[in-house]
Image (cartoon, rainbow over all chains, first blue to last red; front, side, top):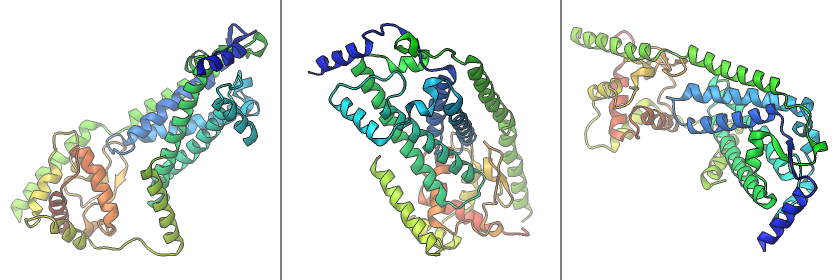
Length: 244
Length: 138
């Protein structure tokens, strides 16, 4: 049953386009995996003050990455552009329907369901970063903390759906979508390939991100100083008590 | 989305409505909070034990004093970010320990960092009883 439909989808997908061509440019891929690191890292460190600086650094990095991605969605290579993959609700419903029947239409770029996940993730990341910034700089009340938490959990839920969609699509189309997000290459006809990987832009992104992380780490309080501070003050307290 | 998230969403809705209605967060005094913590223990809160608890490390990198300072009558410094922290002693910072839910939240977060567990009511009572002994001009 499923094997038959899957192999049919597979044949449709691969017939006439038997080799892999470049689809995802380097900035898209670097953005994707840096987002994975930032969101996972920030989520894990959310409940701890010990890792607060790391949490904030990863959150701000995510904000910067999303700002870049929004720009890249207009000026980037073919499959990076919003105009190429953002579609209306009917197209999304049609695609999900074909997915449920086990015969999804094959897209060289993002499929409509994946595109919806991307738009939602970008919107959530923007609001998450703004609320996080406002919390860290204490420009609003405590209620925002709850909002920040709900947004993070919503984003985790969309990430979950996104991963499930990738696994299901990979299986139905018999193509490794995770591998494609690493190599940038998918099965498609040569004329569908993008011309440049824009590696220079990806290098600038990496340099900026790593530079920001390094600067944050450099400006962090010296752990030895903070460890000594209470010890010294502690002696002062004992003396105070002696004088009492 | 899980049930907790839904509950949180509901809580926010209630909170926003309450804020919009112009009501203020549940008021309380540090003494009332202390009474609440102490009520669940068998012994009277000990300021001395509280001071020790506050300044000792508990098998981890940080003590409470790492961020709040050994005597939290002055502005503390976050040990990770370096950001200033308002004095913890209520006599030096009027908002401290006036909101039970907020105090509870920060005990939960910070005890997890310092001890790797939640604090007992007795431990909270000890610390707060010590903080209440700290007065200006001492």
